[in-house]
Length: 183
Image 1 (spheres, helix red, strand yellow):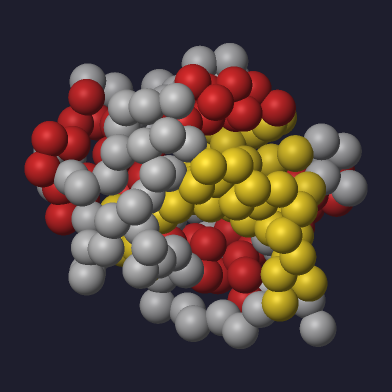
Image 2 (cartoon, one colour):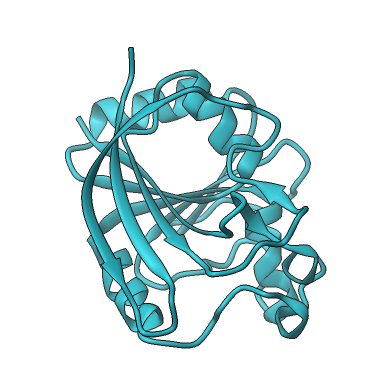
């Protein structure tokens, strides 16, 4: 069975995006996009068999020239969950409409490696409610933003976590990896 890993940047107050990111203006974001954590992240994502993301996360790439149906990360299969996006699925990018939970349950059952949940707070909230996320990898940015897109969208989960790895970077970003213990 494949492992689903929610690997995402987050503020200290648990937001995965501030207004700068939502608007597609990285220069207005408080999140750190430079530093030693960046090459580590690019190396880390090579371990994943596929990337899963919601519509808003996928559309974020459109601000930088990506087009519907194109992968945001080269060399990795993309599953995009949206009932409103319109594009033809292809070998690299598959548009999933309808029941994301059933699709991801099936994807996990069929796989053996790691699947990367890249973003979509609402998608993450749905998946955590169904106990489908196995691990959290949080790149905690040293910022408090007050408002934005919450880590699990509108869902407020109550979870036990087991810390399995932690790394601090010179720019104060901390990458922590937790296994989720469902009760």
